[in-house]
Image (cartoon, rainbow, N blue to C red; front, side, top):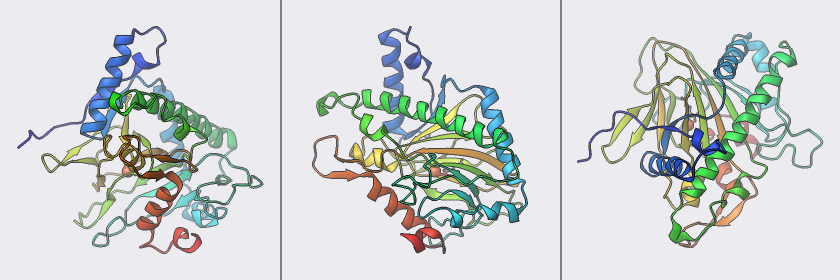
Amino acid sequence: MAEVPQQIPTIDISAWVNPASSAADKQRVVDEVHHAATTYGFFQCAGHGITPETREQIFDLSKRFFSLPMEERMEISVKKSLGQSFRGYEPPFLQNHHKHLLPDTKETFVVGAEIPADHPDAGTFLNGPNLWPTSIPEDDFRKPLISYQSQMVTLGNTLLKILGHGLPKSWNCSPDVFDSLAENPAIPMRMLHYAAQPVHDEKQFGVGAHTDFGSVTILLQQLGTKGLEVWYPPTETWIPVPPKENTFVINIGDFVDRYTNGYYRSARHRVITTDKERYSVAFFFNGNMKLKAPVLDGSGGEVNLGDHIRQRAIATYGAAPTLIESKV
Ligand SMILES: O=C(O)CCC(=O)C(=O)O
Ligand SMILES: [Fe+2]
């Protein structure tokens, strides 16, 4: 039996981004990310270039949003977003990953790429204008969030480049193979708030066990909280993924898992409830929803990102009476 890992690896990617780094230092980053992505599907990422002030600010914004009166949050409910764009506030107990569990306790504010209402794609799945709370000035909320979003896109691109360089040479694909996936990507970002759950119910999770749908997820966790755990199949154990100063949790999503025929692992994870409230921000770099491409190892078959994401969303929201069910 394999040894039970106590934690997932921490990888400093700064050598990859620094133009002055040696080829050997860059290769070390590729190797470490390759090991984490093939073994755990998860790692803690340091050296990403996003400042501690930005990280703090995002939590301040999140706390400000979730402190708005429920009535005001519901004014920008996801149900009011254009067509299937899926933006705005989602109250707790909406998403259910397993029929035998209660729905997730999390509440969410979803921000995506800004697609104006008169854009030809507006209202199609995940495309459309964001919804913003009217009582918080734009400079204090919308602008810093959009700035954070663009930093997340840059980091997502960097991670896909590193992952592209880590693919087996025998596949004969270019290290830039993920460039078309990264083009014009769907990028739903979920600001998450988990209320304290003083009474433990074994059927209740912050987020029930699931895999992420897209390509790469970049998660910011509030320091001093706990809850996130990742499943490690060789030992059949849940590894806790505690928040770490100045790191983001990175995980591979289902699409990259399928695209690489399981080479990079999309690992199951969950958020357990605790008696303390918790904030986190999950940035889902889903990718180019129009991408259709052959599976990279040449084993045959094709992947279609848009179809894949839509099916996964229906599967997990289908149990609750939500817009996905009514609009798709
Ligand atoms: O809040 C977290 O730590 C993780 C959330 C998550 O896994 C998700 O939203 O997909
Ligand atoms: Fe997740």
